[in-house]
Length: 238
Ligand code: ADP
Ligand code: MG
Image (cartoon, rainbow, N blue to C red; front, side, top):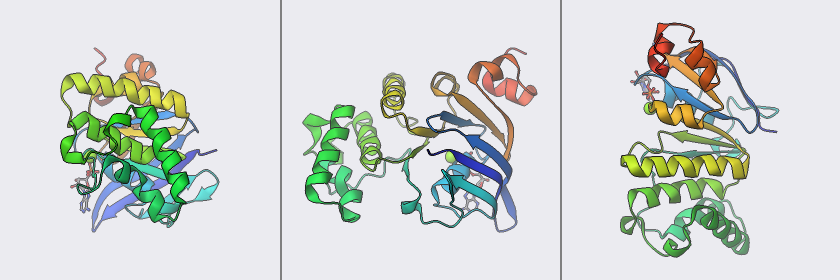
């Protein structure tokens, strides 16, 4: 079971304290959304969970294991970025299989996993294309596919839809909700889009300047915001 638990997590760059004592308890299978103004530390917190950044102090657990200094590839997580970060010279199939191949997984098993992910995401007809021959939404789907094949315990999404136009964003939001239902994995998702947060989240974490202001189900925050900052962010009239 991949519960994610943060205890008094801090992250500083030089003498700038970006994450300032965050406690979080995320249950296996939960869809948790981080919201907060630009620069409040959402990406830094996500990167700290992924291991792309080392935390300065505190404790990070994924499942039973303390992950503070564990290599990102050994944390059972997969991260999907806003920029997709696909390899331009590889086909969709190669992009999706690359991490597994690199980790020494047998060719036949790579093919099985890639096909299964392609199936879930409706990528079948696009498998031999290069990224430049794909639309934004298709590219984002490949980036998600690349995460799925690794069968992570926890998916981390950093504003995955913000480069898409409004219509596609709605469509992909529905896809991501469906994916969560089908895979049952834990998802930690950063967005500045209130509608995405309200519709996707089991639990919303409101951040301000590296501190958690409030955690709760979307309607809890909407009905009972802890302060005017949360109210302003979640859109309650109070
Ligand atoms: P958000 O994703 O909420 O917009 P970030 O986590 O990207 O915010 O950034 C939070 C703060 O940390 C910002 O002030 C940013 O400038 C700073 N920061 C992020 N990464 C670094 C870094 N590698 N070095 C120094 N400062 C950083
Ligand atoms: Mg960010």
